[in-house]
Length: 141
Image (tube, rainbow, N blue to C red; front, side):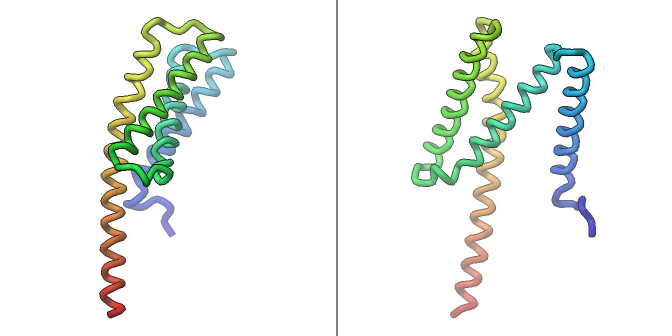
């Protein structure tokens, strides 16, 4: 039995890379007694990735809306979470005056790219499932 195959090869690479990068970053920050800006950015991108995937994974809760409304609601929810998080963080550390704008842009570009890929993949999967259901209906007749 092969654990890594053609279908999951890229996913395994991405997961492995992420685990190694985050582990190494935590290890280095622990050894040095604190994280530098680069390490903080790595953690921030991890948190933003978790937020993006988390928001996209909740699409089924918004199925009563049109696909465009669903995408806009998800995006706005993520942006609100980012802005509120930065506002809370501003009570503990200094946030650059352009920090809010920079964070929204840093999140928006990869999120919107990922959302397009996600919804295209979802549409293709739904089409495939519909074809399977249609074949089943035809075989019953």
